[in-house]
Image (tube, rainbow, N blue to C red; front, side):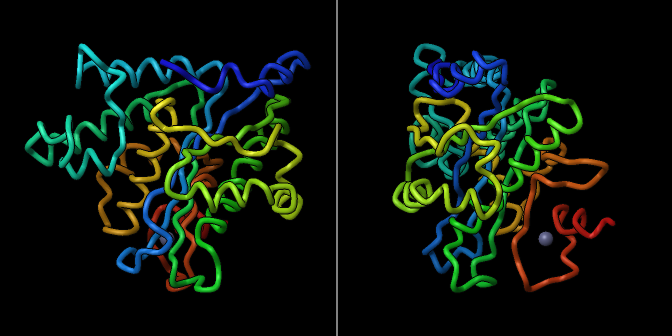
Length: 270
Ligand SMILES: [Zn+2]
């Protein structure tokens, strides 16, 4: 399986300087413009650079169960799997079987023991009518990732740097605009210190880990948009957390100060 992680020049440069790198793969779920959807989610996984290969192999093994002769033709895209309209997902007639496939992809993250960590932000669009929800989610996730890297340094004395890798699909224009503006955003959020470069945009077909990020974003979207917890429950313990407080999952809303979702409940812990 191809991967953008291990060959990126920034990773090579940092390795020469004795630093290690975490790659944050992100994808979106929901639409900023669709009035029928209340939420937009940006989410994904932070992966230690040397773990990229092994995670990709685990996902490749699932692809081989779907199409043993041509696993590369299998792209895990959670909303398409759930919908079951296009091949190969239309051969799985029962919705339950298709949900099982999404859960099996998520279990690769849940069962990872080398510190692969989930991050996501669900933005309730009507709560912030004058903001671009994607920009809001992007800044929030960057901030959480930066905290994660800083904590690694403080707790483990691990000089970790971060690189953000984003699926270049529906929000390419918005996110590339954000990437161009990244130094301003980075300054505002102090993110730039721990990131090695501006975000990279990749084709999700080329990276199994971007496909995993898609599943994380979709799981969070289903939780907030439809109250469906079947997917998020699989990976809830994979979000960045410290002392019982979940830092990696953010529910950005201003309509319910007593929200009982795991992210809001965790934030109320003092
Ligand atoms: Zn909440």
